[in-house]
Image (cartoon, rainbow, N blue to C red; front, side, top):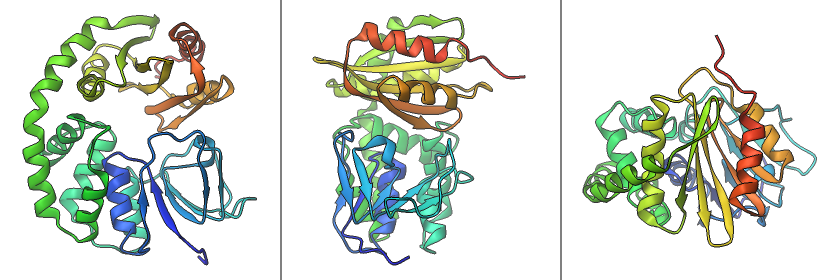
Length: 289
């Protein structure tokens, strides 16, 4: 794999940040965790869960991902090398195995549970809460550096202390649940303010609770100029990949797993426009038997 890697560009959730920290043991280059993706032009980078459909362009890079809704060649026409393995539940585990990097089994399991929102272990619950306290302000560089150094005990202690602020998220969760509204016969949605750290943090918790009684749940992030994006999820046997494809045709970047994924508006959209697009994307999706 002969690539001149000058930086690592990664998704900013626990999985992406830990993956970046692990990969920085291989490539001693700056780490970037961009919050805005649509206008990014990336070259000579290792991209973790950052794919061409989410940014302006990627060239001469390594693209590492475990989300797959379509096939890719090993090397594409832009000179990118793809390491795409959908059998992995987390990209951090993929990176650890591909480059044979030390990654404790307890942490592997916890990150996989967080990334699939299937929280069983005490550590995964701690990580979930620590991130949800302030997803936008999550100290990604600090966490990645601790991972690079293998400071797992210190990282776990930091996450445990951070989760103590989670009570504020729980209060906001109740507010978001009260906003939930039917979108289609199989789905409900709620909106949250992207610029409110507590609402951002509560959005995932509200989704989990709504998924207990609804086949499909949509959380829509709004800001002053309109809809920013959101998350679609289902605990039932519903294949969401067709919804991602539909949204990509409607002016969004969109993708993810069969049962959970996201979307981001390429241009400002009103809530009414986004609801129409989401409704048309979801109205024919039903639980498979």
